[in-house]
Amino acid sequence: MSSDALDGAVWHKSTHSGSDNGCVERGRLSSGRQAVRDTKDRSRGAAVFEPASWQAFVNAVNSGALSA
Image (cartoon, helix red, strand yellow):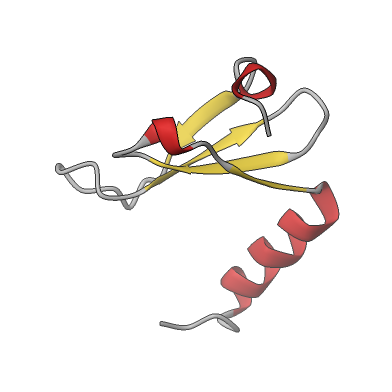
């Protein structure tokens, strides 16, 4: 995805981020899609997910289906 498309994203840093910024940020795009990027290296771009895919991921995390 072009960096221009990500410019309008509203980014939120994970509440699990440490003081070293070793985490990810989620951005909501105007299209409704969700973008995820590395907090430490934002220049690498972002992975972008359709709303249904993002919701399935969130549901899996919340249910414990994706344990570490």
